[in-house]
Image (tube, rainbow, N blue to C red; front, side):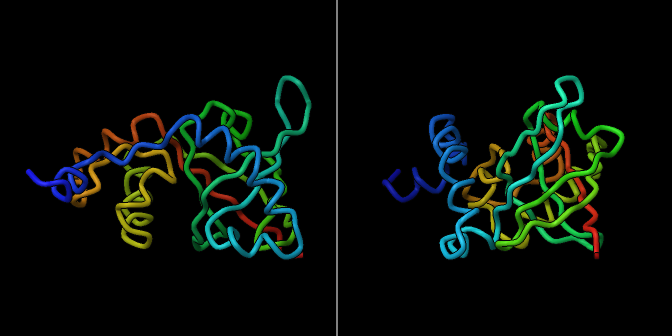
Length: 161
């Protein structure tokens, strides 16, 4: 097996260290008047209130447009603050936009939205939404459902004020 074949079969896996660094740098970049353009096509900031602490938290997420506004995936526990629906503030395309976030835990829905994301952005971008998939081919339904088992999809309806 040559080097190219080895690379083609690798699993797309987000690096924990890269994730930590990105969570520090991305919010600063997305808040700048000019530099946000480098990242705003696929990244946004979501600010929400912790249910127990009452504190405000902001985190970057990879988003995709949907009919109601935007959607994003999470495999981190912070999304539970949005359970049952919650008001949020987004930093989207260089602007602050209010919205209402509603997480969906249904595996079939999460898998369907993940497939839509991969069809738009390509399998090489699976790591951007926290999926561990082979970069050499599209996953079948069983592989995709297994990859999203710890994920939710969060729909954010944007305020149109």
